Image (tube, rainbow, N blue to C red; front, side, top):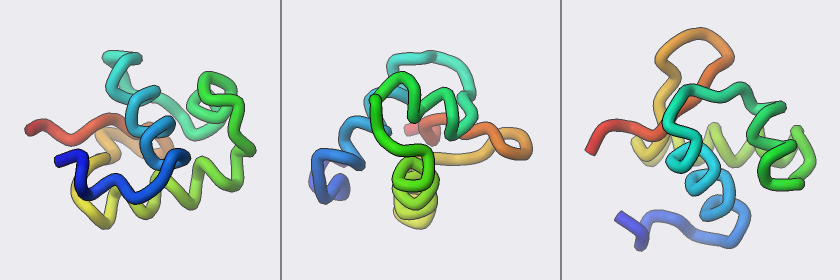
Length: 66
């Protein structure tokens, strides 16, 4: 699974979502990781395309079930 995470930003966003244990908004992920919200949004989109992240409800994101 980790081979699909390409860079440090993706790793931080994925870790923040995994550690939270609940769906988060991109703004919450940005605060937790200290990464710009726009960058977080783009990163979440990349992770969704890879199947690592899902959106259980509108504007909320969580780690996909393994």
